[in-house]
Image (tube, rainbow, N blue to C red):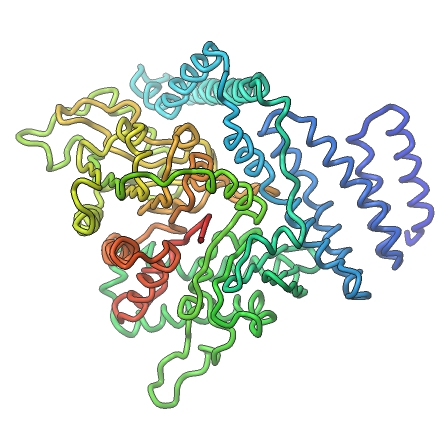
Amino acid sequence: MKQPQQAIEAYNQELKLAQQIGDTSQQTFPLYNIAIIERNRGNLNQAKTQIETAINIIENTRSKVTSNDLRTSYFATVQDYYKFYIDLLMQLHKKDPSKGYDALALHISERSRARVLLELLTEVNANIRKGIDPQLLAEEQNLQQQLDARDKLPQELLNKKAPTTAIQKLEQEQKLEQEIADLRSQYRELQTKIRTSSPKYAALKYPEPLKLAQIQQQLDSDTLLLQYSLGKERSYLWAVTPNSINSYELPRGEAIETSAEKFKNVLRKCQELGIVCQKLPAEQKAKDFQEITQAATELSQLILAPVSAKLGKKRLVIVADGALEEIPFTALSEPNQISQLEKSPQTGKSNYQPLLVNHEIVNLPSVTAIATHREDLNKRQPAPKTLAVLADPVFAADDQRFTGKPPSLGPELNLEQSSLQQAARNLNRAGWGRLLGTRIEAEQILKLVPPSESLYAFDFDANYNLATSPKLKQYRFILFATHGFADPINPESSGIVLSQINKEGKSNNPSILRLRDIFNLDLGADLVVLSACETGLGKDVQGEGLVGLTRGLMYAGAKSAVVSLWQVNDTATSELMPQFYTAMLQQKASPITALREAQLKLWQQEDWRNPYYWAAFTLQGEWR
């Protein structure tokens, strides 16, 4: 009604009532709305006071919650407060660039992201599970076994006598869903109990999200941090080096996310076509490539063009936001080059040049997370051996690697297959066929390392027992060349698919290395590679980012991980991975340098030039 003062008075009444009854959670809403009104009236400093008070209440409330899941869900509900605060600070920076408001906005961006991951890393650094009551750990193991079976329950239902009516079937399905939800709830509650009962928990101090000077200490002269925050009205980008900060206003988040989705969709066209993509007529291939390069340029113009003068040939460390977390920055157009929309008059070909050509690119959940991770990594002795490989597991009882007549599919194996089928449905994929290229890939890589320095497991031996064995801690590089999945519906069910059956045709139970299993690993690896499909994805949780396999690997002790953003082409991957490992193991290149070199070699070949074949793999974590 255009009566802002009366609105403020009403909100102040609401605030006073919340204070009188001692309900701090109800105090943030009126403070937030008063801040919005003051901002709209041009009173930016008054708005800053109000939103800072609200943020302080949020931080205090969050600190009193012991459950990680509740912290995550609560934090997701207040992300608009942090986005508003960032936008307000950047508007103040626009009015007075000398006051350092852009640096403060960057700090608030760090405060708003991946906080539970940061706390998990702090806890593992403190070895918080040491001294835990053995009875609690036994309860945890029991619940894990029940959870391992939870995805198999639908098949048990099918194996029973079929319901006589559709209503009965629905009732059974609903009952089953409730049982699964109860199991998950019990597991989460037990995790909280284990943490809070630790002798070290009371003395544990979580680190504060980094400020500008601390962020700069994590960088080197060859590295440029690009940190994004997507907002409703405006988005922002901070470009940070060890001795500088520059900030840029970008279009609203919706415009950027729409462009990012378009880019992602055209990249995945080949994924939908499968092997047919390689056999398409040259004219169709050229058309598809043109669509990709056009989408890459459109997105690059939105999120990279403003900072193009700062890029040079630096390593780019990306802290993305929203839909940008699922984008391969390596495939975006180099903003300093001639637009690929123009064609060379000499060749008639596109002038598209991906960022890959001039830049190594690393992805991080936040700078604070890598700083916390480094505290633990810097104290660690290097693993004594070089390479462990698990590849080409057996997924089905009719696999040709059985001798004689394929064994019958027993009930236990039926259950495990049901689990995989459910995961496939959640990911909109057909199923889990054998990946013949993974064996070729693994055998080529193993030739680079003396037998005394390596461990390998193919076929039936690439199983859950080996994946969870303490043996793996002895190796600096670990490769899982098999199917993997980051379940966007139930992220705790994400996993790496290992051999489903043994040589006798009996079920391996469990046979999927799930996210909760990965959290319980103790690795000494410099690098874990998941040479599989969509292992870099997960559930996008506001305030946390993508919750999936990568954060489990960081918690387990991996310095860095190479994961994929879509269902990768088996043949292209078997070309890329040996070159990647050759650069690391023989030329002693760092993982990020080796990954770029391998991707460049595919980009330079006409058959593999389409970014679909090489851009899926991204490095997350430590780059030094």
